[in-house]
Length: 341
Image (cartoon, rainbow, N blue to C red; front, side):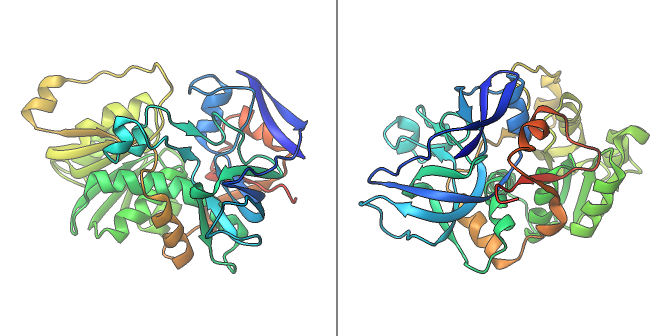
Protein backbone atom coordinates (compact mmCIF):
# COMPACT_ATOMS: atom_id res chain seq x y z
CA UNK A 1 0.00 0.00 0.00
CA UNK A 2 0.95 3.68 -0.20
CA UNK A 3 1.96 5.68 2.88
CA UNK A 4 3.30 9.18 3.57
CA UNK A 5 6.41 8.57 5.63
CA UNK A 6 8.33 11.00 7.81
CA UNK A 7 11.82 9.51 7.44
CA UNK A 8 13.55 12.13 9.60
CA UNK A 9 13.12 15.80 10.50
CA UNK A 10 12.69 17.63 7.20
CA UNK A 11 12.42 14.45 5.12
CA UNK A 12 8.99 13.24 3.99
CA UNK A 13 7.73 11.31 0.99
CA UNK A 14 5.24 8.82 -0.40
CA UNK A 15 6.44 5.22 -0.10
CA UNK A 16 5.25 1.71 -0.91
CA UNK A 17 4.99 -0.30 2.32
CA UNK A 18 3.49 -3.60 3.40
CA UNK A 19 -0.24 -3.57 4.09
CA UNK A 20 -0.65 -4.23 7.83
CA UNK A 21 -2.28 -7.38 9.14
CA UNK A 22 -4.55 -7.08 12.21
CA UNK A 23 -3.65 -8.85 15.41
CA UNK A 24 -6.31 -10.39 17.69
CA UNK A 25 -7.50 -7.03 19.10
CA UNK A 26 -6.90 -4.83 16.05
CA UNK A 27 -9.03 -3.42 13.27
CA UNK A 28 -7.75 -2.64 9.78
CA UNK A 29 -9.34 0.50 8.35
CA UNK A 30 -9.38 1.61 4.74
CA UNK A 31 -8.83 5.36 4.96
CA UNK A 32 -11.50 7.59 3.46
CA UNK A 33 -10.08 10.91 4.72
CA UNK A 34 -7.31 12.14 6.99
CA UNK A 35 -6.85 15.78 8.01
CA UNK A 36 -3.59 17.71 7.82
CA UNK A 37 -2.98 19.15 11.29
CA UNK A 38 -0.60 21.87 12.41
CA UNK A 39 1.05 19.18 14.50
CA UNK A 40 2.00 17.33 11.30
CA UNK A 41 3.92 20.42 10.21
CA UNK A 42 5.52 20.67 13.68
CA UNK A 43 6.60 17.03 13.32
CA UNK A 44 8.12 17.72 9.91
CA UNK A 45 10.14 20.61 11.35
CA UNK A 46 11.19 18.74 14.51
CA UNK A 47 9.11 20.99 16.78
CA UNK A 48 7.09 18.18 18.35
CA UNK A 49 8.46 14.85 19.63
CA UNK A 50 7.87 11.73 17.53
CA UNK A 51 9.64 8.53 16.51
CA UNK A 52 10.49 8.52 12.79
CA UNK A 53 10.45 6.75 10.46
CA UNK A 54 6.67 6.78 10.80
CA UNK A 55 3.56 7.23 8.68
CA UNK A 56 1.97 10.52 9.69
CA UNK A 57 -1.74 11.30 10.04
CA UNK A 58 -3.78 11.23 13.25
CA UNK A 59 -7.13 12.76 12.16
CA UNK A 60 -8.63 9.88 10.21
CA UNK A 61 -11.76 7.94 9.46
CA UNK A 62 -12.64 5.13 7.12
CA UNK A 63 -14.25 1.74 6.57
CA UNK A 64 -13.30 -1.36 8.56
CA UNK A 65 -11.86 -3.94 6.20
CA UNK A 66 -10.73 -6.64 8.66
CA UNK A 67 -10.96 -7.32 12.40
CA UNK A 68 -8.98 -9.49 14.78
CA UNK A 69 -10.47 -12.62 16.33
CA UNK A 70 -10.92 -10.98 19.76
CA UNK A 71 -12.68 -7.85 18.46
CA UNK A 72 -16.29 -7.21 19.47
CA UNK A 73 -18.59 -4.27 18.79
CA UNK A 74 -16.85 -3.36 15.53
CA UNK A 75 -17.57 -5.20 12.29
CA UNK A 76 -16.25 -5.31 8.75
CA UNK A 77 -17.98 -2.59 6.75
CA UNK A 78 -18.47 -0.19 9.67
CA UNK A 79 -17.51 3.44 9.17
CA UNK A 80 -15.27 4.45 12.07
CA UNK A 81 -13.15 7.28 13.36
CA UNK A 82 -9.98 6.58 15.30
CA UNK A 83 -8.84 8.09 18.60
CA UNK A 84 -5.09 8.16 17.95
CA UNK A 85 -3.98 8.48 21.58
CA UNK A 86 -3.31 5.09 23.14
CA UNK A 87 -2.94 5.13 26.93
CA UNK A 88 -1.32 2.24 28.81
CA UNK A 89 -4.07 1.94 31.45
CA UNK A 90 -1.49 1.02 34.09
CA UNK A 91 0.37 4.17 35.17
CA UNK A 92 -0.65 6.51 38.00
CA UNK A 93 -2.15 9.04 35.57
CA UNK A 94 -4.29 6.41 33.86
CA UNK A 95 -5.50 5.10 37.22
CA UNK A 96 -6.49 8.66 38.14
CA UNK A 97 -8.44 9.09 34.88
CA UNK A 98 -5.86 11.41 33.31
CA UNK A 99 -5.30 9.24 30.26
CA UNK A 100 -4.07 12.19 28.18
CA UNK A 101 -1.13 12.48 30.60
CA UNK A 102 -0.30 8.76 30.47
CA UNK A 103 3.37 8.12 31.21
CA UNK A 104 3.52 5.62 28.35
CA UNK A 105 1.26 7.38 25.83
CA UNK A 106 1.67 6.29 22.23
CA UNK A 107 -0.08 8.08 19.40
CA UNK A 108 -1.08 6.81 15.97
CA UNK A 109 0.53 9.02 13.36
CA UNK A 110 3.26 10.15 15.76
CA UNK A 111 4.79 7.09 17.44
CA UNK A 112 3.16 4.41 15.30
CA UNK A 113 1.93 4.42 11.71
CA UNK A 114 -1.01 6.67 10.98
CA UNK A 115 -3.67 7.62 8.50
CA UNK A 116 -1.86 9.27 5.57
CA UNK A 117 -2.01 5.92 3.85
CA UNK A 118 -4.38 3.55 2.10
CA UNK A 119 -4.91 1.67 5.37
CA UNK A 120 -4.29 2.14 9.08
CA UNK A 121 -4.13 -0.47 11.83
CA UNK A 122 -5.37 0.37 15.32
CA UNK A 123 -6.52 -1.30 18.52
CA UNK A 124 -10.28 -1.82 18.35
CA UNK A 125 -10.76 0.10 21.62
CA UNK A 126 -9.60 3.24 19.74
CA UNK A 127 -12.33 2.92 17.10
CA UNK A 128 -15.67 4.73 17.31
CA UNK A 129 -18.51 3.89 14.96
CA UNK A 130 -20.05 6.58 12.77
CA UNK A 131 -23.37 6.56 10.91
CA UNK A 132 -23.21 4.80 7.58
CA UNK A 133 -24.78 7.81 5.87
CA UNK A 134 -22.27 10.32 7.26
CA UNK A 135 -20.19 12.12 4.66
CA UNK A 136 -16.84 10.29 4.52
CA UNK A 137 -14.91 13.55 4.93
CA UNK A 138 -16.73 14.52 8.13
CA UNK A 139 -15.32 11.66 10.17
CA UNK A 140 -11.82 13.13 9.90
CA UNK A 141 -12.93 16.06 12.07
CA UNK A 142 -13.65 13.94 15.15
CA UNK A 143 -10.09 14.09 16.49
CA UNK A 144 -9.63 17.88 16.32
CA UNK A 145 -13.15 18.39 17.68
CA UNK A 146 -12.37 16.03 20.57
CA UNK A 147 -9.34 18.16 21.47
CA UNK A 148 -11.50 21.30 21.31
CA UNK A 149 -14.09 19.69 23.57
CA UNK A 150 -11.44 19.10 26.23
CA UNK A 151 -10.37 22.75 26.06
CA UNK A 152 -13.97 23.96 26.31
CA UNK A 153 -14.60 21.56 29.20
CA UNK A 154 -11.63 23.07 31.06
CA UNK A 155 -12.87 26.59 30.27
CA UNK A 156 -16.22 25.82 31.94
CA UNK A 157 -18.08 28.34 29.75
CA UNK A 158 -21.33 29.36 31.41
CA UNK A 159 -24.46 30.55 29.59
CA UNK A 160 -24.17 34.29 29.04
CA UNK A 161 -20.37 34.32 29.34
CA UNK A 162 -17.99 36.38 27.23
CA UNK A 163 -15.41 34.37 25.28
CA UNK A 164 -12.38 35.32 23.21
CA UNK A 165 -10.90 32.87 20.71
CA UNK A 166 -7.39 33.65 19.48
CA UNK A 167 -6.65 32.06 16.11
CA UNK A 168 -8.90 31.46 13.13
CA UNK A 169 -7.69 28.05 12.01
CA UNK A 170 -9.78 24.91 12.26
CA UNK A 171 -9.33 24.69 16.05
CA UNK A 172 -10.43 28.27 16.60
CA UNK A 173 -13.43 27.86 14.30
CA UNK A 174 -14.50 24.66 16.02
CA UNK A 175 -14.12 26.35 19.43
CA UNK A 176 -16.32 29.23 18.25
CA UNK A 177 -19.05 26.71 17.47
CA UNK A 178 -18.64 24.93 20.81
CA UNK A 179 -18.73 28.25 22.69
CA UNK A 180 -22.01 29.04 20.95
CA UNK A 181 -23.42 25.63 21.89
CA UNK A 182 -22.31 26.28 25.50
CA UNK A 183 -24.43 29.43 25.58
CA UNK A 184 -21.79 32.17 25.44
CA UNK A 185 -23.41 35.55 24.79
CA UNK A 186 -20.29 37.22 23.42
CA UNK A 187 -17.85 35.32 21.20
CA UNK A 188 -14.94 37.32 19.79
CA UNK A 189 -12.48 35.76 17.36
CA UNK A 190 -9.11 37.34 16.56
CA UNK A 191 -7.24 36.50 13.35
CA UNK A 192 -5.38 38.46 10.68
CA UNK A 193 -7.09 36.76 7.76
CA UNK A 194 -10.27 38.46 6.56
CA UNK A 195 -11.72 35.27 5.07
CA UNK A 196 -11.41 33.49 8.40
CA UNK A 197 -13.01 36.40 10.25
CA UNK A 198 -15.96 36.28 7.86
CA UNK A 199 -16.29 32.52 8.31
CA UNK A 200 -16.12 32.85 12.11
CA UNK A 201 -19.06 35.25 12.01
CA UNK A 202 -21.01 32.77 9.89
CA UNK A 203 -20.30 30.06 12.46
CA UNK A 204 -21.34 31.98 15.56
CA UNK A 205 -18.80 34.66 16.47
CA UNK A 206 -20.61 37.83 17.57
CA UNK A 207 -17.57 39.93 16.61
CA UNK A 208 -14.12 39.54 15.09
CA UNK A 209 -10.95 41.63 15.19
CA UNK A 210 -7.85 41.95 13.03
CA UNK A 211 -4.92 41.99 15.50
CA UNK A 212 -2.70 43.65 12.91
CA UNK A 213 -5.04 46.64 12.58
CA UNK A 214 -4.27 48.08 16.02
CA UNK A 215 -3.84 47.05 19.64
CA UNK A 216 -5.79 43.76 19.94
CA UNK A 217 -5.77 43.92 23.74
CA UNK A 218 -7.42 47.34 23.73
CA UNK A 219 -9.85 46.18 21.04
CA UNK A 220 -11.04 43.41 23.35
CA UNK A 221 -10.48 44.50 26.95
CA UNK A 222 -10.08 48.28 26.75
CA UNK A 223 -12.75 50.68 28.08
CA UNK A 224 -14.25 50.90 24.60
CA UNK A 225 -13.46 47.31 23.69
CA UNK A 226 -15.76 44.47 22.78
CA UNK A 227 -15.47 43.02 26.29
CA UNK A 228 -14.56 46.00 28.52
CA UNK A 229 -12.33 44.87 31.37
CA UNK A 230 -11.69 41.54 29.68
CA UNK A 231 -13.51 38.35 28.82
CA UNK A 232 -14.64 35.63 31.20
CA UNK A 233 -12.82 33.02 29.12
CA UNK A 234 -9.96 33.27 26.61
CA UNK A 235 -9.03 30.26 24.50
CA UNK A 236 -5.67 30.48 22.74
CA UNK A 237 -5.96 28.38 19.58
CA UNK A 238 -3.08 29.61 17.41
CA UNK A 239 -0.03 28.27 19.23
CA UNK A 240 2.15 31.34 18.60
CA UNK A 241 4.02 33.63 20.99
CA UNK A 242 1.96 36.77 20.39
CA UNK A 243 -1.40 35.16 21.04
CA UNK A 244 -0.21 33.27 24.13
CA UNK A 245 1.00 36.55 25.62
CA UNK A 246 -2.16 38.40 24.56
CA UNK A 247 -4.44 35.77 26.06
CA UNK A 248 -3.66 36.64 29.68
CA UNK A 249 -4.13 40.35 29.09
CA UNK A 250 -7.51 39.87 27.40
CA UNK A 251 -9.00 37.96 30.35
CA UNK A 252 -11.00 39.69 33.05
CA UNK A 253 -10.00 39.60 36.70
CA UNK A 254 -10.91 36.14 37.94
CA UNK A 255 -11.08 34.92 34.35
CA UNK A 256 -9.87 31.70 32.77
CA UNK A 257 -7.26 31.29 30.03
CA UNK A 258 -6.94 27.94 28.25
CA UNK A 259 -3.98 27.21 25.96
CA UNK A 260 -5.37 24.91 23.27
CA UNK A 261 -2.99 25.71 20.38
CA UNK A 262 0.08 23.52 19.97
CA UNK A 263 3.16 25.70 20.44
CA UNK A 264 6.57 24.67 19.07
CA UNK A 265 8.59 22.74 21.60
CA UNK A 266 11.07 25.08 23.31
CA UNK A 267 9.18 28.30 22.58
CA UNK A 268 9.29 30.82 25.46
CA UNK A 269 6.85 33.61 26.26
CA UNK A 270 6.88 36.53 28.69
CA UNK A 271 4.37 36.63 31.50
CA UNK A 272 3.98 38.91 34.50
CA UNK A 273 3.37 36.73 37.57
CA UNK A 274 2.20 39.74 39.60
CA UNK A 275 -0.59 40.26 37.07
CA UNK A 276 -1.66 36.61 37.35
CA UNK A 277 -1.63 36.93 41.13
CA UNK A 278 -3.29 40.33 41.43
CA UNK A 279 -6.09 39.48 39.00
CA UNK A 280 -6.31 35.84 40.15
CA UNK A 281 -6.23 34.46 36.63
CA UNK A 282 -6.62 30.76 36.03
CA UNK A 283 -4.23 29.67 33.25
CA UNK A 284 -4.64 26.09 32.01
CA UNK A 285 -3.09 23.91 29.37
CA UNK A 286 -5.38 21.67 27.34
CA UNK A 287 -3.66 18.53 26.05
CA UNK A 288 -5.31 16.02 23.73
CA UNK A 289 -8.74 14.49 24.19
CA UNK A 290 -9.30 12.52 27.40
CA UNK A 291 -12.62 10.66 27.04
CA UNK A 292 -13.95 13.21 24.52
CA UNK A 293 -13.53 11.35 21.21
CA UNK A 294 -16.84 9.53 21.55
CA UNK A 295 -18.63 12.81 22.29
CA UNK A 296 -16.98 14.38 19.26
CA UNK A 297 -18.19 11.53 17.06
CA UNK A 298 -21.74 12.01 18.40
CA UNK A 299 -21.62 15.76 17.75
CA UNK A 300 -20.35 15.23 14.20
CA UNK A 301 -23.03 12.63 13.56
CA UNK A 302 -25.75 14.92 14.93
CA UNK A 303 -24.97 17.70 12.48
CA UNK A 304 -24.63 20.22 15.33
CA UNK A 305 -21.17 21.23 14.07
CA UNK A 306 -20.72 22.82 10.65
CA UNK A 307 -18.03 20.87 8.81
CA UNK A 308 -18.26 21.54 5.08
CA UNK A 309 -17.35 25.22 5.42
CA UNK A 310 -14.12 24.21 7.18
CA UNK A 311 -12.80 22.07 4.31
CA UNK A 312 -10.45 24.18 2.18
CA UNK A 313 -9.50 21.45 -0.26
CA UNK A 314 -8.99 17.74 -0.72
CA UNK A 315 -5.68 16.32 -1.97
CA UNK A 316 -4.31 12.92 -2.95
CA UNK A 317 -1.67 10.94 -1.10
CA UNK A 318 0.78 11.99 -3.80
CA UNK A 319 0.16 15.65 -2.99
CA UNK A 320 0.24 15.24 0.79
CA UNK A 321 4.03 15.52 1.40
CA UNK A 322 4.11 18.93 -0.29
CA UNK A 323 1.17 20.15 1.78
CA UNK A 324 2.78 19.04 5.05
CA UNK A 325 6.21 20.45 4.19
CA UNK A 326 4.87 23.93 3.41
CA UNK A 327 3.02 26.58 5.45
CA UNK A 328 -0.76 26.78 5.13
CA UNK A 329 -1.97 28.73 2.11
CA UNK A 330 -3.68 32.08 2.82
CA UNK A 331 -7.24 31.44 3.95
CA UNK A 332 -6.66 27.71 4.38
CA UNK A 333 -8.63 26.12 7.21
CA UNK A 334 -8.45 22.34 6.78
CA UNK A 335 -6.86 20.27 4.03
CA UNK A 336 -8.01 16.67 3.82
CA UNK A 337 -5.93 13.87 2.34
CA UNK A 338 -8.23 11.48 0.48
CA UNK A 339 -6.41 8.34 -0.71
CA UNK A 340 -9.13 7.54 -3.24
CA UNK A 341 -8.57 10.75 -5.22
